[in-house]
Length: 140
Image (cartoon, rainbow, N blue to C red; front, side, top):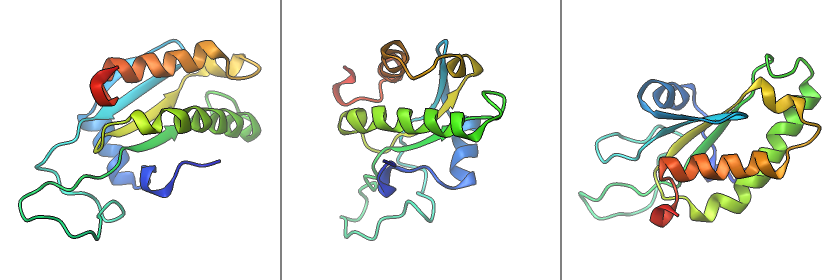
């Protein structure tokens, strides 16, 4: 099950902005790049909302997430796609906790492919890194 369209980081420009300007947190299995929401940046074409808002209010876009898995992780696409599906399933549970406006890229490290399946330890690391970045509402 894929992330909802409103929560997908799609454009190359958005990925580059996160890598260039975002903060980085590393774990043993994943690295998370995150770009804080700011009032000064205009949303990209695919993130622009056609909703009526008060003049002067910044648009409240939902958190956008991209997952990057290189062929260095594993040469087989089947393995990379399985990892991506499992990360996406974990993100579905965490999505309601996200503060709006964040742009995140989750980069999977080659050590993650050594596991037969994504373990509880892997998912716990994902949640801990997101909490360190303070992506969650209330920073829990």
